[in-house]
Length: 116
Image (cartoon, rainbow, N blue to C red; front, side, top):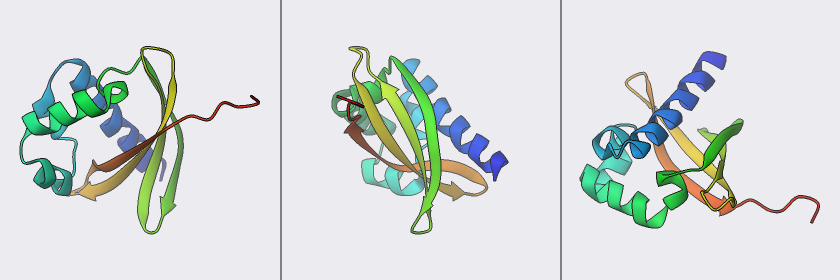
């Protein structure tokens, strides 16, 4: 389980690093076949992330939170702080393809203020 968790974190970190280096081909390689099929090309995928998810494209920082199984799927929670200092919670849905962990979708929501 721990080796799998580390491999999942490595895949997500690898995609963040690829985005940071403007390596959309590399970032696209971390996406599942389903996601790759949905976007069709690394360029289309990269444009969607850059325009729609700037906090993923260029995070200020990120930290891994819980990993849990939900309905037979694994969800890695990542707390992302964008460059303006706002915090986001990202649910990274993971799938294993040919022994390698790939990202099968991400849902993002603003992190609720704790303690108001």
